[in-house]
Length: 80
Image (cartoon, rainbow, N blue to C red):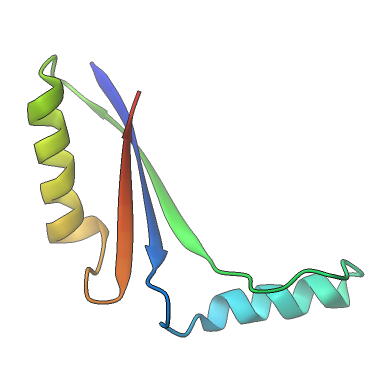
């Protein structure tokens, strides 16, 4: 069993209205000095495989096909 974490974030230069909304809400709640908030997604997965190279290739394919919109998002894969 291989455990992995995929982190998906917007590419630099892509507008992030949700990040802006969070930034504004934090200010309203009294958290001053917070800026440049960007939001993303985290996926924790368990793969039924002992082959680390195959798992890494499968994870990349999952990101390219479903987990990330590669036009506007970057992704990073961490294997535990």
